[in-house]
Length: 182
Image (tube, rainbow, N blue to C red):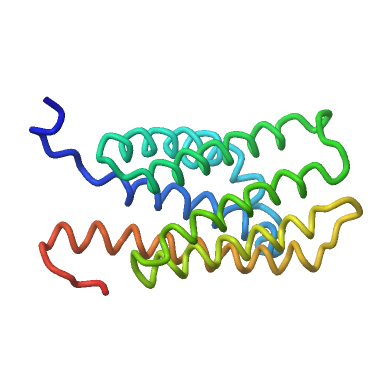
């Protein structure tokens, strides 16, 4: 029986995948490294953020964590969809990226409400992710608002740092059997 075996916590892997993929795209949105992060995110969005996110989602379902499963499944699909959108420029209508991101901003807000009581880090992560997506949605709306995209990029970098900290915290504290990282 599946319940007789211990299933490893998949959240650190999902948070690392989300954090690194978000960092790459956000660094481009923030204007760092002459946009190289935007090019580097293509394969990362497909494989690490997207496919790994979906695998982590399934593992979270097995562990019985509906919030983790919903988050990693939703944002795994987000990264796969974004990869497809970026790979097929002919399918891009003006403002479509803004509408796409706005829908995920609503989803991020709902998930933030669901995790508010878990920890300060979950709360901060949910807040920053929602705010990041709001700025990016506005920035990518028809006509574009580059200042908003840049702010969204910097907020995305902060979101990625919090995700990577949460991944490190879970891995390190579990490995050492005590709370080394608060």
